[in-house]
Image (cartoon, helix red, strand yellow):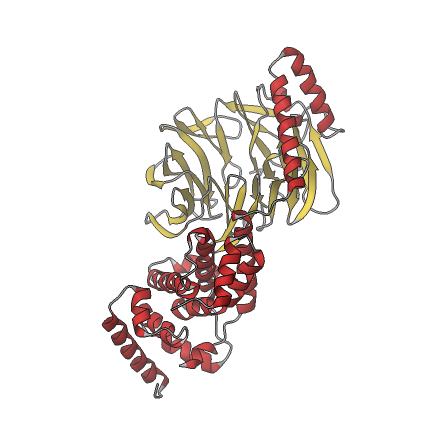
Length: 359
Length: 173
């Protein structure tokens, strides 16, 4: 039986090297080597942010904040968001509610909602208010609503003719058909993501890790013990992204850990599984797309959001109170809109909740 | 089973922050861990997953690891038990929907193919016993300990497994 040693396994070498990269990264995370210089930079950045936050609470301080914002934002930023660089509707969630911004810059307040997401083909918006899940027309007209305690994190998935919304109600994942019927509990969880084009396969992040559920049978197909509180499924259906506490992990659709690393936030492209990652840099944050640096600045970038055509990314930049558009491919190109919180009647920089395709 | 001196030094180095020693441990133990997982699970992607997860578990519990104990059996226990679990669960999965993600790897040569087909005909726990005995070279007593089953069970699984393999391959084992 020494032949067991000689059985050829195709891809054995590649598997070993992939695994080594993951194991090495896990070991480095467990016991990072001391790097005094690198630790100093984030410390300075944090101190600067703390100082800005402190003075912002006084009237005189607010002027200082505006000065700082001018200094750290994109210099050529427009005074407000006048247009989008790509077709679609940008969903913005501010203190006072959710907004949809068309590519010509026209804004429509959808209502007093704390989170929102697009339907797969951009025909509707799922939003959550205090204790309710709502399906909206893009202009804000309510199609139907469902009262559920602590509703949050709606994700609308499916095909052109059959869709489902998965959402969280307190600590439970629930699923409802796109027409508002058949609402039912699936499992405990804290984040969800549909496999694109599927009304059956739903990734769920929960206390024991990440699982993929067959929603029809209610059964978990696999579970991986990787902690996450945000999830995304790549457009080509081959990868699942989990994010938590400054780290990301990418799993295959069968649950194999593909890669992991530091990230403040991340998002899959709209066509394949190219990843846009926001991570901390020596002086602030940097946006890396497909392994290439596309944009960097002081402070912390948030909410990387792909345009439906996959050519642009939007990020929120709270320290500058700007919305920055970064071209994702080809020659670098940046455009920005300033005074974001003022434009959306918000006391803090609004959050980007999605960039919906045009129906 | 006592740890080899090189292995003990690698574990000590890894506990003290040496990435080089972690790599030495990985390079020394990955090939057989991955192969064992593959022979039990019969799926290259799953084998990679299982072996990788075993190493990640090792990294996570490195500080608690007793250097007087050998590393190999500890790692192999995780690998083989997870591979058995995976092989049992496989038939319950919606393979049709996930088939694109978990391609079965075809062996490149006929001899390997025949052996893999014969192994595949065995129940997962029989495969595991044969792999532990004839690839990883544990004694039946050690296998009983690794799988947490009586030694008699190990012996009977070995005998029945080898008989079935001989029948499938048409040869004496």
